[in-house]
Image (cartoon, rainbow, N blue to C red; front, side, top):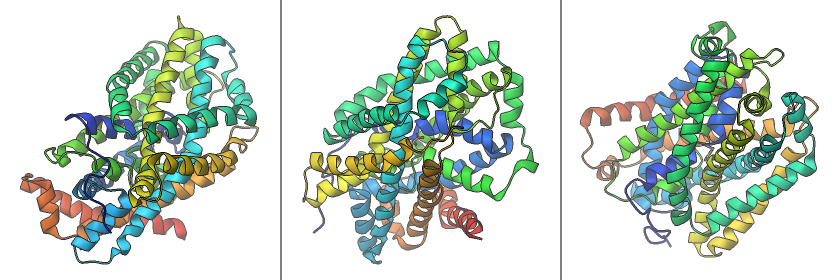
Length: 441
Ligand code: PHE
């Protein structure tokens, strides 16, 4: 019944897991999502809560997901099932994998549309010097035909890579492209320091104004933390399944989390100096914020028509290295059950995502807001991902046999182990639970 270990293969090379997991984590969530959410949620206080969520909830869950995945070597559904059976508890824990795969399909449906806008901006920034960048963004998102074209291309690329198997293609790609994205981001931050309102941006991002906190802030910050670290929906668990046994799970989790956070903060420091320097642009501008502010910078800087496209190419690649990780858990499941080939599995799930994505492509209003997308995101990112993460924490904290956990962790520092146990047993489930329950009432 259970498929053999490692039915999908193992990452080649010591660093490939870190790179692939970082590729999964670093994406639109960091560069598109983080700045605009910090903007709409009032800045510093949001950032602080976000950072707390990363450290107190995100990292402990990331460690858990990698552990469960690597132990079993299967898709999240079967990895959960196997760990549950080996711990003599109900195999219904595989439901966590099902929640995850459903969340992934919803997430990918809008992720692909936004990534499609990045693809479109490669060409926009190569050729346009339109100073009304806000108007330009609105005219693009109000053209469903355009959005559908790029959505289709992006979804097709994702499907293609996943059906080919993730290891060789993406493993190699991220090694070159992620450092390049990092360099360009540094360049954008330096540009902001020189030409933008950098001080204002710093105090907006790092001076918490607690009067701006609502119960919504917690929900959005927590969802963003799960989204950005790719947690609670199986991506990291699936990637963990391809990780070799001799790697250290704890230090790997910290590296991936730190890199992800660094990129998000840098994106904020690239975007807000420009927003604050330009009359008429608001920090609370919403989903268009990044496209508008960065394109404004590209329009005014020397060689903007070259640097702009390079930036959007890299952003698209970052999105692609994330989108394949969103698709992977479902495809791995269908393929390992043996009913369908990997390619057919990838096609079926991709088409489902593509169809749901039509709602997002047609959903933008005159102001650039998108009711459909916002609700799909609310359900998948703000509710399903934290819920999945909470269940994983409860499972590993309370139900999984500790001997199995210790086997998998090898000789981990005892102090770190004990801290992780406390976080995963109490802090993470209670924290997520309070935020989710407070939303219901
Ligand atoms: N972490 C990715 C980003 O920040 C998105 C993602 C979400 C990837 C969920 C995998 C799973 O863009």
